[in-house]
Amino acid sequence: MPYVLGFVIALFIAITGVGAGTITVPVLVLFLGVPAPIAVSIGLTFSAAVKLILAPAQIVRGNVAWKTLAFMLAGGLPGVLIGSLLLRRLALSGEQTYLNAVLGAILVTTASWQIFFSFRPMVRNERATNRQRWLPWLMLPVGAEVGFSSAGAGALGSAALLGLTELTPAQVVGTDILFGFILSLVGSGAHWSFGTASQPLLLQLLAGGLVGAVSGAVLSGHIPRRPLRLVLWVWLLILGGQFLFNSYVVWAAPQRLTIGQGTAVRGR
Image (cartoon, rainbow, N blue to C red; front, side, top):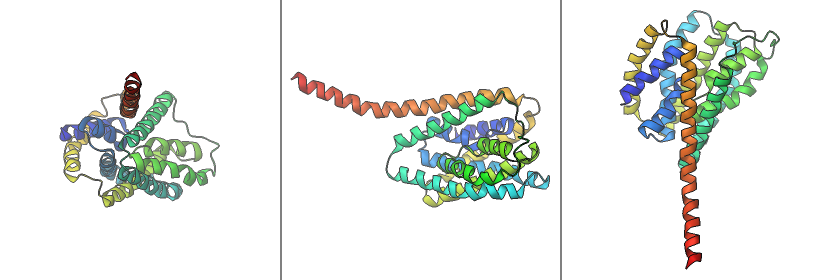
C-alpha cells in the first residue's frame, strides 16, 4: 500500500505541481493510520526529496532571485523551527485529537483559498516595488505552518512573491521552489532529530514516488493541469473536513457519556 500511495502522490505532484507535504500528511493519517507527528516528518522529507530534483534545474536556468530568497528565509527558517517545536510539544502532551483538528483546519483553509483563487489569473503586481522587505514577517507564519503541518510553502509563498515583488513568473516559480526545498529540508531535519520519523515507510513511499514522478513527467504534457488541480483541492478540502469531523466525534463522545451518566443518576 505505501508503494501505491507514493506513486499516486508523486504522480499528482508532477502533473499538478501541488506540494508534496499538502497531499502526503492527510493521506498517511487517514488511509494508513499514521500518527500526525510521524506523518508530518515523512511529508517534509518526501517534499524535500521531490524538490531536490526540481531545485537545481531552477538554479541553472537563473530563475532564483537570491536577494528575495534571503528575505523569505529570514522569516521562514525561524518559523519552521517554531512550528516543528509546537508540533513536538503537542505530540508529547498526548493531544492527538487536538493536533488532528488543527491539521484539518490548516488543510481546509489552504484548500479553500486555492479553490477560491483557482479561477483568477496569477498577475504580477506592478506596484509591488521595494515591498519585498515585508517578506520576513509574512514568511514567519508560513514557515511555522510548514513545520507544523508540512503544507503551505508553495501556495502562500507564490502569492506573496506575486504581490510584493517585481519578479517574473519564472522567477516566482524558481524562488518559491528553492524556498520550499530549504524549509522542508530544515523541518525534516528537526523532526528526525525529535525521533518522529519512520524510515521504512519513508523508503517505501520514495520507491513508489520515483516511478510516479517519472510517469507524471511523461503525462504532464497530455493532461490539462488546471482542472486536475481543482479536483485535487476539492478532494483535499473533503479530507480536511474529515479530520475535523473525526476530532469532533472524539471530543463529543465523553461529553455524551457524562450527560448520559448524569441522567441515569437522576433517574434512580
